[in-house]
Image 1 (cartoon, rainbow, N blue to C red):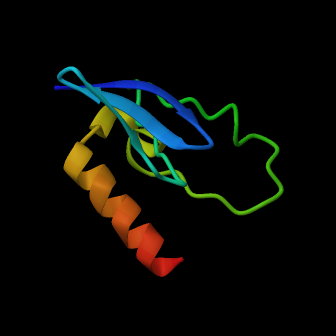
Image 2 (image 1 turned 180 degrees about the vertical axis):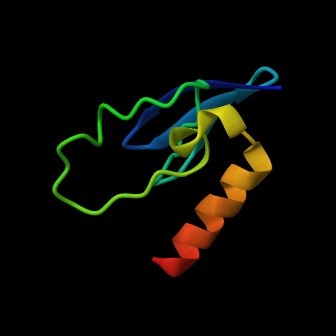
Length: 76
């Protein structure tokens, strides 16, 4: 298994077994919870897209959400 510790300017800090590692990433997507929380997008003045469970939590499906995210990224 893998444990996630934190994210900072160095990247994503994880531990695999007993081996701490830092993944040098510049973008992290957190997928957590099963209820949509749209408070952060209310009042935005820039375009945004809701996908996966943020869009329709009752139809939560990881494969569908990944598909939506991939297609959106390709379109952008």
